[in-house]
Image (cartoon, rainbow, N blue to C red):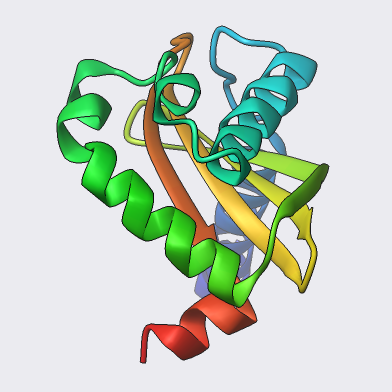
Length: 142
């Protein structure tokens, strides 16, 4: 084989390796997909209902420290103003990063769709992160 052929074959192997790695399914949390959707719906419903106690029972200790009742009240106010009340969960996808299962769920709110990202440790069942993204939320944060 000449140098050009070797380079082409090496490049092809590298591309195929990357494609195969991308096709592997992500590792989940300890919860099934339906359980993740139900838990997320419960958290979002608790926000609608202004019920901090119902919002936090599945949070890790770190999340409880970071998300006190004043943070909850502030988040609720911003969501109510920009997006309205939570209506339902929809399409979900999962990815992994640094030992975490990251679920992105498209949720229907009264005024717009909101992408809710809920994070668990791989094989974990406690919420380690919770993030919201939408057109209206981005506009308010600028």
